[in-house]
Length: 329
Image 1 (cartoon, rainbow, N blue to C red):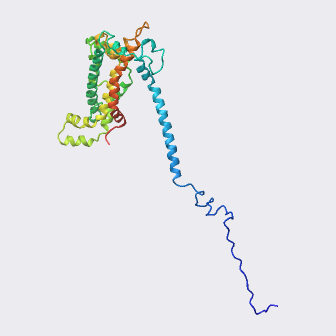
Image 2 (cartoon, rainbow, N blue to C red; image 1 turned 90 degrees about the vertical axis):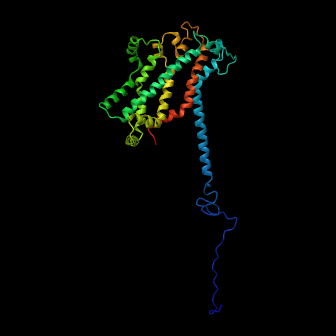
């Protein structure tokens, strides 16, 4: 028997620690479960930027590949003409590839001297027309644009609206009265019908382009110049023109390309072979009977494209800036 006065020893249960081979629960920190912080619980921060950079790189490669393919499709006719200029006439339409199997340089020498005059004669004629049109548009259109943008005169809005409506008139509407007028002035078979209208600000597109650019230039510059004693001519020459170089460059590039490639107007006003320009001279290579000298035609077409390519190459940044901007920033 146990003595009643002796205290009874009680044992408290000890907490059972899980052994190393015991499978922890899904939420255990040690194993990195769903709510854990281990490597299996969440993706490392460095993995996400790498994945995004890889996706952006793949997208950029695909985009550039598509642009290159589209550019090749657009340039294929030009590349084919360049390749055909080195082929004999018998192989031009038999071999549609871009790499000529039989290289022939005689197309350039034959085409240069195939017409009544050397091809340099027609290049000089086109250069004279382009130079006169270029100077005429830069001077007359900038003066008209300054008047619409800075001066106040009666009927300003009406004349501006008429100027804008003249953009919608096709050349076929005005070519007949122009021919009658220039014929009475005895200007046919001269370069005057192609140059003199440019001196009278007949290209409304360039006037509108420069008006929008002049309106973006702060009027405070004009007011400060007026306080210093400048008249409108000095403001135009010393303030407006230096600040509007992008618009002037855009006008010059467009005038050069459009005048150099103009065929219809030059065909109407120039009928004598010695007055032919490059587009009309190229037309003479094509025979209505089908005996056309295609090799010489393609060779001289490449030669005629060189000035346009050079003008666009060196004036591209001014062209984009002149169209995209409407004033100084």
